[in-house]
Amino acid sequence: MTAKDLVKAILPPSVRGWLKAQPLRGQRFLRRFRSEANLGSLRRTTPACADWGGSRGQIIDRYYIEKFLAEHRGDVRGHILDFCDDSYARRFDGAKTTKVDVLHLTEGNPQATIVADLARGEAIPSDTFDCILCTQVLQYVYDLDAAVRTLHRILKPGGVVLVTAPGIQKIDHAGTEADFWRFTSPGLRRLFEEFFPKDRLDVQAYGNVLTAIAYLHGFAVEDLRREDMEYCDPDYQVLIALRAVKR
Ligand SMILES: C[S@@+](CC[C@H](N)C(=O)[O-])C[C@H]1O[C@@H](n2cnc3c(N)ncnc32)[C@H](O)[C@@H]1O
Image 1 (cartoon, rainbow, N blue to C red):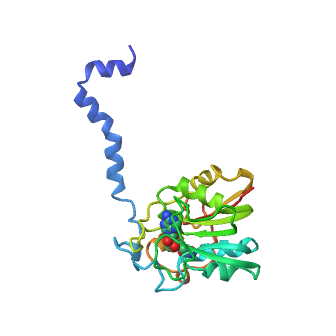
Image 2: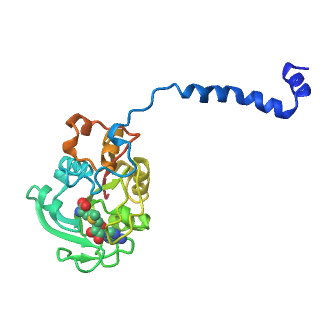
């Protein structure tokens, strides 16, 4: 008989349970003497600024979106599709644009030249665009597979889609469409791999634990240092960006 069997045989279950819990109790007791985390002005249950930081300066995810678009400026050419308005198409086009279309889901946007649902896509012609700037759109589309199928279909062969999507970000209750999804770099890659060739896909994640917390609290780029913004930690993805090319 082992010592364990002996203890089992002579001690009632209630006493055995009490003995097992002792190390845990000890740990809980010692925890009282640990120094309290200094959360400073972050010890609050509501955000410091509820407008994503727009009233304080540049919005943190916009810094990453615009960095990504600037890095891929060379793709923004020919017939471009932008969403909501044409500001990114104009800003990053490098004068190689032949035409810009603006897609919006609902009627009533004066800048929209195409009113359509990406998930259905019937109002958007196939093999049309050299470049699609699909920034901050996919979180509003419930059927992501259908949306990516449409993005692939409407690109010309050799055309490029530049996508950005939210990672650790607060939910947008202000828009007319529901804010359905948050993304990770493997998730976004997998979604696009269903339709685009794997060797023509690049995914990049931006942000770190500090920029994630700052963004959730509504602090702006101006509240942080440049090195805070530039450090990318794959465990804390604030923004995920993807470039995919149609074969
Ligand atoms: C926040 S705006 C993003 C556009 C902007 N260029 C940006 O960088 O923020 C969201 C856009 O996604 C569009 N959208 C939402 N759901 C959609 C859907 N199912 N099909 C097509 N567009 C959709 C909206 O109409 C809107 O133009």
